[in-house]
Image 1 (tube, rainbow, N blue to C red):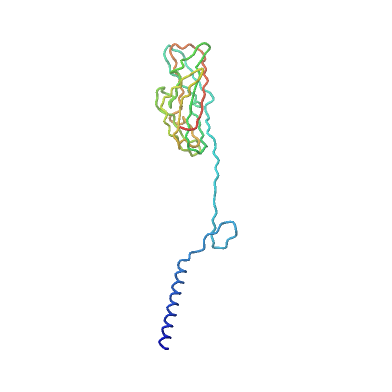
Image 2: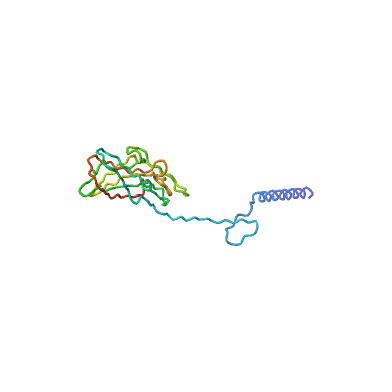
Length: 224
């Protein structure tokens, strides 16, 4: 009887130790209370979480260009290269507020320069580049973010000077500035600073005196 009682005591004691060990394990792995959803009242010391959402609507792609172009010269019996010297004509503004990063390009077409029955040649007369001192300059117009506006400057792949062929029936548009995808975002002035936009006319020596006019069409198009 004495031996049996001692064995029972040891077994019960072992069970108590096992239960105690299991309880300690539960306490060690238990973490703090999780955050609640914000909105309902939460008790002090309990964080809550919510979702912040910004909904942006795409804007437009716009071009603000000169209102007119103009040249002045005096015939001297020689071929001449004339440039538009009006500062307001030597830049244009592109505003890409689409948020798409698709890129864009600017095109120009023009009709034949005409003065009564007299005309200038349709090929080799009109060109543009980033210089007001050299018609053959290969320099691109300088691009810069507009004042108080952050932008992604364009990556321009256009080769200068750009020839603009005039055609009275169906003017062929020439790309005068372009941007690669993911560039040219924001408000950007083309032709500001060191390299303004040069609008050039090549005047043959045999040109007759008169006031010659042409209709220029500028367009901004989405995509490089």
